[in-house]
Image 1 (cartoon, one colour):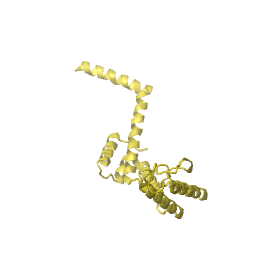
Image 2: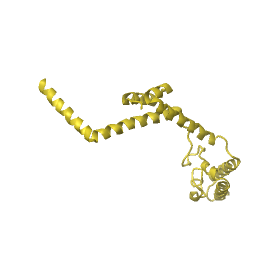
Image 3: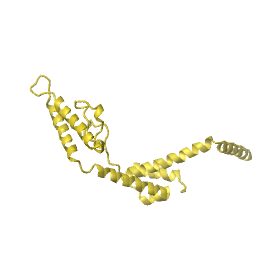
Image 4: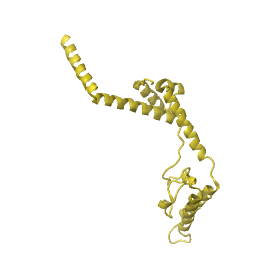
Length: 191
């Protein structure tokens, strides 16, 4: 197993935090082949996830259009005017949402919430996870290569710190601490 150096890892994290690039060579050198393999696996998974949402199925496009029409109607709505409350538009969107999920359960991944928790209003209707709407609850934000590197480096530092804590709390750690204290005591007497 590759020996991790906490100081070097923290320098790489600081470099990423400063907006600078960290090379794959740095990742491999500091995290070993295991770290590089984990990076490659995470990046491949991210590309696969992006591909999943790259092409909108026709039913999803129809749903998106219905929600846009409902939002437009909602923005025009004012009480005591000729514009009707957009409830029926949102109800139509909810009905289509249910039909989509019944037709193909895998398409449920496109929605930020399930059919059973939606309501027929601007804040309650399901949004597509690819939507830029501030009303969506969850989304599919692209994860950058640098973010993956950052998470791997932080994970490695956390692992080192956990191992250090575990050793400090162990009997061997306590024994070593006592021996160091005795040595410090003896060395202060010699000076």
